[in-house]
Image 1 (tube, rainbow, N blue to C red):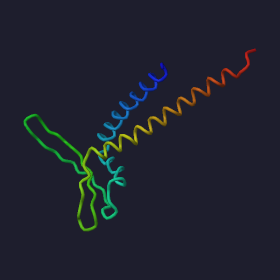
Image 2: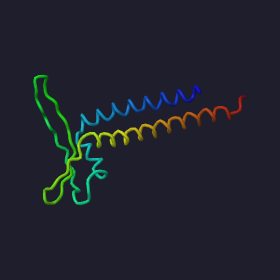
Image 3: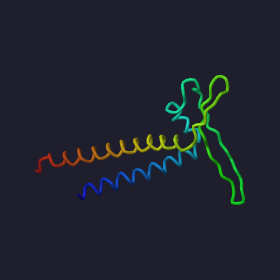
Image 4: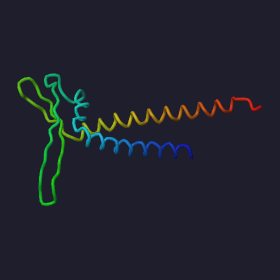
Length: 120
């Protein structure tokens, strides 16, 4: 039961880490939403664009990014923001889980190797 709790805590920590990494990636390169375009853009609208929208009110300035798919004749579809963010989160979360698994495998192999070595 203790291991299940540790596993759940590790998965939760990886999810929080994925959110932080996604935020940093989005701040550094807003065009990262384009990476999700193959999942959302139809075949007749293969060109993906990330559009920055800036709005101002009494509280300050808000900036948002939206993914658009455009066709040859200028027709477009707005995919939005949250679906690409969700897929980007899954990409990053999968990568972090993969790295964590590689780290666990390496640690387990080292421990097994130490146990197998004879003591002189």
